[in-house]
Length: 333
Ligand code: DGY
Image (cartoon, rainbow, N blue to C red):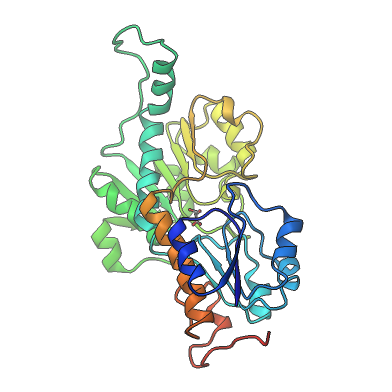
């Protein structure tokens, strides 16, 4: 059987796949060209992709033998799950293994923006530091402030767990309220979205991207935030109206922001990179050596479990496609 890996991934996952499959590998740090991808999927049984490949009806039609898609990401907004399900193709993703790493990075962004770490770094490198100045690069205290967490799944809860050490008041909003035990353990209060954005000093976003969360934060939401608020987005770019964010940061409607993701990733909207009060990272939240290895291995194991051992894979993004009561719904090749 043949699998395709669409991009450079940790070597351990490639080795694992090679011990079971014939492997085609676009072993590059750049995205595979669409036309090449569509050609490369023609004879594959399994696909290991990243968030840079759009797995839609067009791609699935180009892959008549494809039996499973394993994305080495937790987010699945690059995959048309309905189209995959329609073709009885299970899609697996990698929740769990990146939770703590992403929560850490959210905090890295939050602290970097509140305490102006990146501005200070640039200042030092430019040789501008001429001695201690009491009023230089004044930031904002984090300790004891109010943190508003939008999306209270694994990562959002990981962010809340860390916030306890900062003595923060924790508000959260999600479509589904967490259990009382979780709320008590994390000292987190479930509030409506409006209250969260009005009362929080720091707002972090951890929701999935779908039609209900696209531009969840736009001009009118910014207006409701405190003038001293900071927004951190380490989920998906289109959740924030990036053009509105630029206008907001420019005119001081909120104090700062930190972004790991972009509405038109990898591009940024005009003006964003010129603003001093925004910290910008190139989609790094899960980017630790340990976690990226776990993500890639988990995706590889999903392909092996399903295609070789005929097991239902763990972490299905479209569980309706593979019924656990059915042995293994492999499509005819
Ligand atoms: C994911 O896994 O969805 C991330 O955005 C990549 O780290």
